[in-house]
Image 1 (spheres, helix red, strand yellow):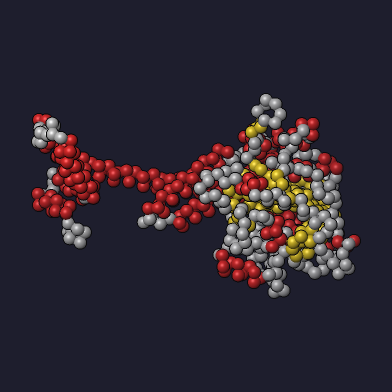
Image 2 (image 1 turned 30 degrees about the horizontal axis):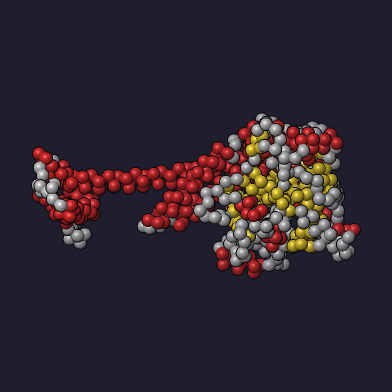
Length: 579
């Protein structure tokens, strides 16, 4: 579901006009050249799936977005109403085109379902979107000191919540015009990183921006990155055994709080994927056919730029790259003057490289509007599926880690958690799981390509099998307990049958006190009840050994001496029993 409001600002610019000369230097190799063409328009949408921790542990469904509204946390995030809840006169053709792109089941997932009985009565979509508008721009300072910082405009920053699934997906869209291709590659490589994995000798985070700064509309710095703070990341991992995220991303997610931290917060999240955030990139160039094979590979894998235009990896590794990752339905190499649009999908990265001529910018099949709507939705669904499977797998592992087989309370809690996870998985399967999302050829094939590289189908099968195994274990454990109970009841019934047969033979009435006073009859009743209860309880305690004795007696091949030994074992203690 794409919520598309008017972008916060128009156009993006280099810092040359507003920064000191030291910040405005642009290395000659970064300027436009045949080997480093100008990207007329660049747009990047970063997604970050995160697992939400339960707020109320006894609640089967956690409605985290309701806590944002109920606890006055809407100063930063405000819920966005989609185009279907507004005035029908404002419903545009692009909204209609996006809606009909998807299959009916996916439409109900994305947009809800209207009743058709008038306005204002709808079945809500399971997706709720919250948006913050205080961050208007992001200023990126690159590792290369010869490249000036670049300001990107922020189109929107959204949080996607999903009903009955403890997930939230952060979606941030930025854009800029007239950037060197090397700068675009650097941005694709360095911007979507949650934390550094190593540090350069100079102290900056490996493959990270030197500095990322969120800017308000007036240019005020709201927050900046701290990739260079090596001690912070090392001490955090040592203390919490979990990675720490960079300060500017942490600021962007407020008032949500990282679960593995000492910060107070009602809604807490934890990471379920690596530091490499999934993202989509859209590039328009005057002549994309002039890009080399190495350029396309770097754009598809978000690999570091290389002035020598060498391949980022070995030729053997990239031998069938085009077959695995390219989607060239609208790409015409035979017409280098008007090559069209090429899609590159590697799972984590979805890149669209297009001719900037009006012919390709106007069409909905390859234009920017479809990239921001239909393609964004299919990318969101694919990563939502993967994140949901990772979340359920994480919950299974956590439940197993907390299980103490010898502790009845722990086993009971484990059984409840597994049944709850099974319920969530079944509801996810019937509400959210789609093998196909569209009958439109390019959308269908791009969704398949994304899922294949993400390995979502395999992950779904693994989680389903793990849940089924645990469910079978719980069912077998219940059957075992029921079997043991039936054995005990059978033994008690067998022992009681002797007394019943003895006292009931021919209707015998051993004590003829029917006309005796009530006190006398009550005393006789207690004198029989208490020994009978004691014998019954003792029989239950010895029921396992008695069942073994009865099994030995029923064995016609067993010797009388063996049966007698089995009878004696009923009364022996564990230390006295024969080996």
